[in-house]
Structures are given as structure tokens and as C-alpha cells.
Length: 528
Ligand SMILES: NC(=O)C1=CN([C@@H]2O[C@H](COP(=O)(O)OP(=O)(O)OC[C@H]3O[C@@H](n4cnc5c(N)ncnc54)[C@H](O)[C@@H]3O)[C@@H](O)[C@H]2O)C=CC1
Ligand SMILES: O=C(O)C(=O)COP(=O)(O)O
Image (cartoon, rainbow, N blue to C red; front, top):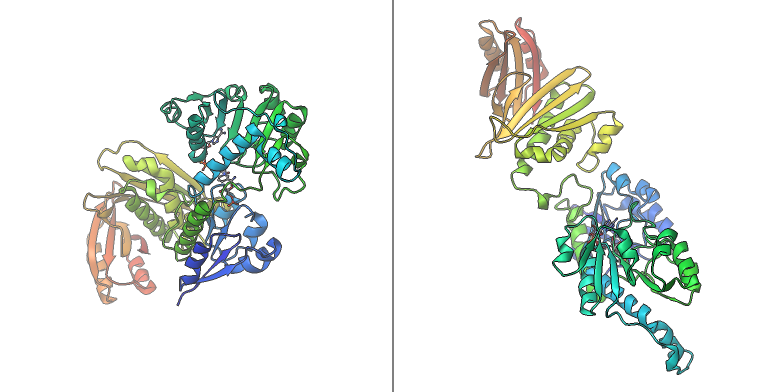
């Protein structure tokens, strides 16, 4: 029985572990307590799939050792510690579990916000640990009537907004990547001006960590804020520059901060911990039983599916999200791959360029189509090629891949044309899919000729003189090759092309005999 190894690199809910344990095709290794260097050097090389959380960096060191890896499942949302481009180069699919911990992160954000307003952990400590009853020391502020600036209005940010509204806060949201109505429909203020956020009483951030968002709040932004502002960060360390945060808290410009995440975790030596006006938690945004149950079971299910090659839910580096494409696109992608494969067999030499043109609605998916064509074109020369690394492999091999959207199609509803240039020449194939689902090539190398995209195909090009078809038929018959379909076309240079579909594989002797006919210009053979 085929067995796949799934390595669990960080702690996930036991219900997820049970799923892995009970699947007879899965050999599961629990490595959450293994030292990270040892994990990478000794266990990761065995893994078909790894499940990780924020404690395991999927960096170059990790990826270098992931010699068998098909997929990585990030059991959570943020993938800032996963080097996705390097994974793509190696053909490793990266998946996350995007919404399973939303509520946990939302509720932790509210916890921090309220804790900051009432200095709750400090009054708690005063009474519980220091046994001091001093009510006059602990005056706080109310959320009601305060302006809350939310940076990032996605799954978490938008839900924080709804809860804050229930506390009668005025919400101002900054997120350039959403439709403003997502905010205004909730009777909240949408802004494109970041200064509007800086003018708020309380600011919370819920964006991914990337080049655009790192240090989105730095010294300059803190300087523009209201005196006594409260800052909350339950997204990622470094979105608020930690030095700016420290200085702002130290000076009192920032009255209080609620921080769940740090640039370097575990953050036991972070200087922010020395301050008296900060509430901290050790990256607990996702730590509820409900959320960890959801994440653990979803991550395990997705890891099992990926290990078996059945599905890659929430894959982040596939060329196309299959759940979001209209049904007519997928057969075109499959056909594009077949055409790439077909053309690579006609000119068997180094590919220099691949040009993919689309007409009709399919033209909107031309980049994805180009990826599938590339996979097909390189599949016999590059064993490790797949949809994830196709673009990188092509670049590495110096192959120029171009995709062109030609807009509307005149004759066919949708038409794709694939032109592949090698050191030995250029081939071009145009194809469509008819209403009945039939995949047909409708032109090749300037000949208008129609034939199905399947089977064993001989391309016989000759000078257009009498008697050639008979001779071709005789050679094939003498070699026991049965013809299933025969199409013929001529061009203006008095050349003819016969595309002959045959029932069985054609050997080199047969092809040489065909090539030796006087009228023959070229013979090519492809198997799909
Ligand atoms: N502390 C914790 O344990 C947890 C932290 N997180 C963090 O929270 C982040 C957000 O999570 P979700 O809301 O689920 O993600 P999401 O993808 O639903 O929302 C992110 C939002 O940020 C917006 N955005 C992106 N760049 C922006 C920019 N430059 N300025 C303003 N807005 C921008 C996006 O348009 C999107 O609406 C995650 O990326 C993760 O890093 C998530 C879960 C738990
Ligand atoms: O899902 C996220 O982005 C989180 O930050 C949660 O991280 P964790 O899985 O708890 O290490």
C-alpha cells in the first residue's frame, strides 16, 4: 500500500492528529517538540507534506532539506514566515487555513483593547499578587464615543469593527484593496487617507505582513498621532516598528499598547516588556479550543488530501484557483497542456520561446493557460515540472514565455494558439473546444486542418504532387499501422499536410520509410 509521510512541525489539536493517525495511507510523524534544526535536517527530508504554524520558519534552510515535499499546510492564516517563491521554485504547494481562527483573533483584539483602556492586567496584579486595594489608582477610559482606526478590513478587521460598533465606537477603516461599500454599508467611515487613521483614539491593525505593511506605523506616523493614543497589534510583529512603539510608549505619546505579536518570537527579551503601559500576550490570537479544533482538523484533512494528490485546498501558489474559475476554462487548460506536449515532440530540441495567444473569453485566463502549456512543453525534458514551478523552470532554462490576450474571437467562440520555437524551428497550433466538449486542433503551421487532440498522430508534409497519399497508405499498411483518421490540407506554396491518426504506436523504421518518399518535406510523430 502506498504510504505518505506527513510531518507535524508544531502543536495542532489532537482531533487533527487523530485523523492523521487513522488514515491507513499516512505515516505520521509528530515533531512539534523536536529542536528546529534537528527537525529540518533529519525529519523534513522524509516528508511528503508538512503541517506548520508560526513557530516553524519555512525558510531556505527548511526548503533545501524538503527534498520529497509536495505541499506545506500552514495551520493558520499568516504565511509571512513561509518563503513562498522558494517553495514555488521547488514545486512545493503552499496552503493555509484562512478563516478557522478568525473569531479567536477578533476576540483577542477586543480583549487587548479593553485591557488597554482599563489597564486591567495591572489592577489585577495589584490586588491579586501585591494584595493592594487602591481603587483611586485605576481610572481607565471608555470605548464608547472613541474613534477606532482599523488598518486592514478583511476577515478579522471587519469583525473587530462590528464588535467595536456594539461598544458605540466610531469606526474609520483604511484598506485600499476592498470595495469601500464593505465599510460604508455598515455605517462606518472608509478612508483612503492614512492620516485619518493616525487621528484616531485607538488604532488596531489586521493586515498581512509584507513589504508594504512592515513599519506601516513608524516614528513619523507616531509623531502625527493624538497624544494618549492606544495601539493594538494582534496581527504581526513589525507592522508597528518596535522602536517607534517603545519610544512612543516611553514618552507617553502612546498611552497604552496591547501587543500579541513581536518581530522575534519567542519574545522573552523584547524591550517592550520592560514598559509599564503595555499589555502583552505570547502570540495567542489563534489559541482558543474552538479555533484550534477547526484549524487542526482542517489542516490534517488538507494535508491528507495533498499527500494523496487529491486536492490542494487554499493553495496559495497555484497559477489558478480552481474554485474561482468558470467551468469552461479547465478543459482549455488541459488542452493547452496537451498542445504544449504535442509541439515539444515535433521539434525535439531546446525550446527557446513559448507564445500563447487567446481569443474569446478564454483570453482572460491566458497567463494560467501559458503555465499549463509550459508544463506540457517541458514535461518530457524536465521530470520535476509542475504548475507551481513552471514559470521558474522556464526562466531558469532561458525560455521566454509570452501570453497575449487578443480579445474577441471571430470564427470560434474561443481559440487558443500556441507557438513554440526551438533551436530547430517553429511550430504553431490553434485549437478550440466545441459545444459538445470536443477538443479540436483547427490549424497548424499555416494549414487549416482539423483533427482531435488525442492519440498517435503522424504529421506528413509533402510537395503537392500526385500519388503521395497512396504511397503513405501503403507504407503504413506494410508496417501494420492502422489509420483511424486522415485529414489533408494544402497551402499556397504548393505544399500539403496530412495529419494521420493511427491506432497504435509508430516505430522509427516506419517513420524513416515515410521520410524516404521523394515528395516528403518532413515527417513528425507525436503521442498524446
Ligand atoms: N495573532 C494571531 O495569532 C493571528 C494573527 N493573524 C494575522 O492577521 C492577519 C489578517 O488576517 P485576516 O483578517 O484573516 O486576513 P484577510 O486576508 O482576511 O485580511 C487582510 C486585509 O488586509 C488588507 N490589506 C492588505 N494590505 C494592506 C495595506 N497595505 N493597507 C491596508 N490594508 C491592507 C487586505 O485588503 C485585507 O482586507 C493575518 O495576515 C495574520 O498575519 C491572523 C490570525 C491569528
Ligand atoms: O494564523 C495566524 O496567522 C496566526 O498568527 C496564528 O499563528 P499560530 O498558528 O498560533 O502560530
